[in-house]
Image (cartoon, rainbow, N blue to C red; front, side, top):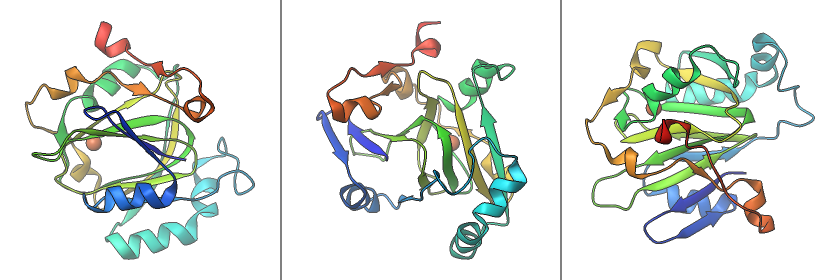
Length: 195
Ligand SMILES: [Fe+2]
């Protein structure tokens, strides 16, 4: 289940309805689809796309997306940090960034003018749609793992368009994680920041 954090006010938002209430102001769509019992998150891409074919078709119809694929990132992914560095600076895209998380965790920071920056932590089962033109950046949590379905109108539209704002440098990729709700300690994936 996703979690929203607003660093400026230390506010944390949990639960599907409160999260949707908050995100709707920014045009961001959020849903949660079960993964456990539906498909093995480590299955091949075709098996995963087939398992979620109905939802993918609905999203394509709703958002005009043409293609879907499955991305897989682990700590062993070649040139992992270089890849993460493409997306952990503030940028926009010419099309929506649509991700359904099968495994692992990541964090989007959203920066809408005149509004406090907020973080959306996503994990297994979370579907998020960051609309085209929304200023944001993304990083993985400490386990550096994510497996996700991506939807595109055209893959070229997903090229990051950097704003040149260094705002991301002031926000460590702090992932509160499932332990947060149990009173545990937050983790910081600060490889990029401390390097
Ligand atoms: Fe992005």
